Length: 185
Image 1 (cartoon, rainbow, N blue to C red):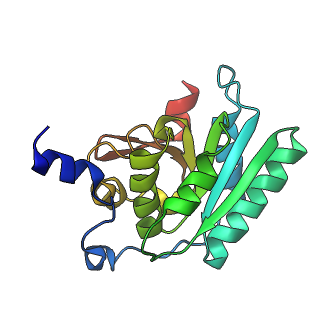
Image 2 (cartoon, rainbow, N blue to C red; image 1 turned 60 degrees about the vertical axis):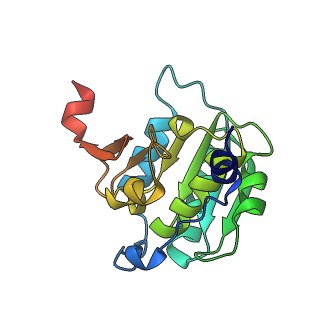
Image 3 (cartoon, rainbow, N blue to C red; image 1 turned 60 degrees about the horizontal axis):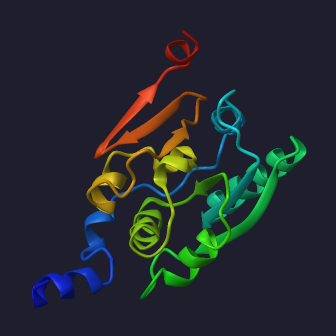
């Protein structure tokens, strides 16, 4: 391993120029259709998801969405192992990343502002066993700029619900929306 390669592998995964993400919208309040679609993704017949870890930004919309999801999930008999919040800007997301991945849930659920989630996801991929393919998110993260901001395949496999109850997924740097009619066929 060369010195340059060694330095790159130990470098903090912080996004270098968060100003590039300044035009990303703040999370909007979640909708009932969005929450129902998100629960639906987690309860598909072959999903076998019983335990979740919930992560959220500290803004009011993300916090409310996380609380609503936790209430709906536990009402269905599911278990919330932990709920972790993080700031939009920080020197490191190591502490929230480790707290979110400390227990091994069946899935992770994210309600967050785009920049904070991109920063946290980079730390999760760099420092934990977190798997974006086992992660589900609210509509605020459906923006195709989020996987581009997070970097190569950091969010590959992430799935979520739109505000109107459709679903979406990330494949590499692309976000594809699936209309309910497409899903039920």
